[in-house]
Image (cartoon, rainbow, N blue to C red; front, top):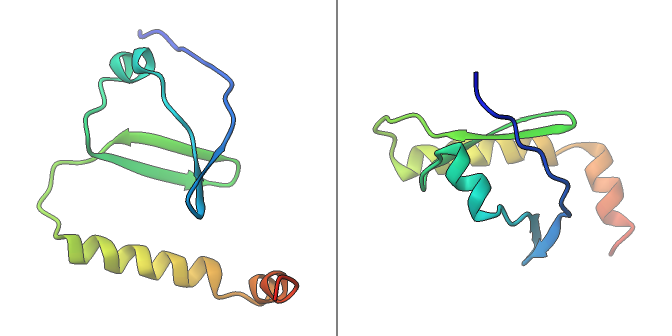
Length: 85
């Protein structure tokens, strides 16, 4: 078994995005390195060690573009953005 550490934090602005700062003790306990994978489902974002495979930057960008297209190109997004223009 392993220890489970929990903490409450706040999303902070980082440019046009939002993020969190992960304290060093949590990073050390997790054993994560520089490369991580984000797994998302409603109400949850998990940060896990990235699998070791040869995937080009172009492949990663293409995947990101496909996800953004699916998530952002929806009528409700257009309606939300229209109110800001």
